[in-house]
Length: 314
Length: 316
Image 1 (spheres, rainbow over the protein chains, first blue to last red):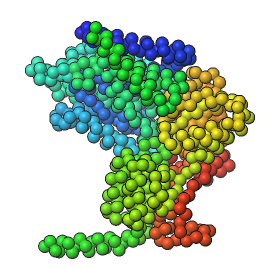
Image 2: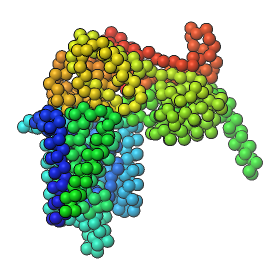
Image 3: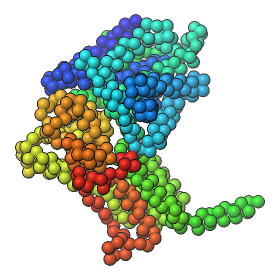
Image 4: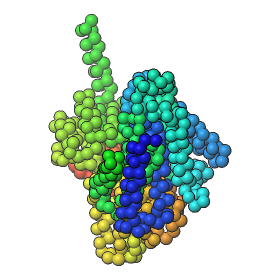
């Protein structure tokens, strides 16, 4: 591991701790165990998407479609369960179908980027418009409601007192972290993002690795969509997922992932997502005036990255 | 050859012109949350009502941002329309093009969001003041003038501000009602859910919640259920979304009232344009012309009358 990476990791951890302390002093209710689990819960679905985004970004790409992609996958999961009936096996089957379709669509984006030689910005911008339009079209602009109480209970369930979305999020972070930082595949992802030509000469199948990052992105979006849609037991064709792409990219970048590829960690993204979650929670806890929320949020994000850079330059 | 082509084109345009006597352009924002989705649905519904009327031709366009809407209206004007029914995405940017339409003699109906000019034919809108005021009045009565209230409002904008101020106006005579928090839920179920989850952790006693619309109310209900605090609390949303209306109809104790801000005002506006073009006047009016300004009343929905407002086929 590079010293630089370790430092930037601790930098964001430092920023997070400062943020939590400030929030805790200004509003003691912030530090309640219940509120802390709520923050993990509220961060989970953006966080899972951000994990997928981290793979894509380290590999030198970007995915702007994740928001409408999540709405489409959530709608698919709900409609499949509704069609199959309210049984445990149909819920499991629908989730598997959703993840499979998500992986396929991810592969589609990846292939257009690699084999089609279209910039990822363009491919995923197009995908964003297409997915949203499909979601709107099938619901006629309305809401997809889940008729299955078994499906709706997943997102609200607690195991050992912890909300299921939070547990899934933590497990996903650990698994993703191992894949990215402890496997050959992970090393290849860094290599193609850092220097594509060098990677090609090292006999790395650049196209295949890059496509795989989009597949991971699609799987992440699907898992997140299942959690979100079961939690809300609905997907709004017009509003669900709006702005997710910015939050996911922001989480990755705050966590030290480079916008130009080759650099970043899952732990960093995890902490970056938590910083965003803490900010959102804090704004409500401290009852910050509506119009000033953007100002506070913006200042905190910029300072968080600033602190990180200070540590890196030492 | 060229002459023949021109002749055919002229003939074709004459034919289409003869077929559709009145061409009406409808320009509204694209569905970006439940209510706008409802408006798109109602616009399509109204147009469908006239499907058999061959004297009418409709063009419906939806925009994702103001500049797109300006371009769409320009295209409609270039195409040639006799009436324009528009819900401006924003007031200022859409004003010049609406005025241009009016000056060209297009019958211009402005829906809900006004423009910054008096150069239009008819304006029809909901009553934002009463929408907030009636919700506040109901909560004050229900709490008997004492308790803790939380406001979860919509996306910051002038409509939202007017509603929230009116809500607070209604609470002014009750010094023992305390507004614990006022936070944006952005007209989204997910955001309202998160905000309510956090507020429930912070405040042990919340007696009433007002959300700017029914979408957000559903998020609040989920948060209350999850925290097992869905008892002894007064909940008020607004705009008459069908799932909430169903709860009121079924006598669910959580939600007992709703206030309209009807997305079907677009359908009414389309009817107004049709009546104007066909030279009909409003039933019961002695005047020949259409009214210049119509403010629709905010209607109160309870268990008794909920079925009159419930449209199961609508998307909102």
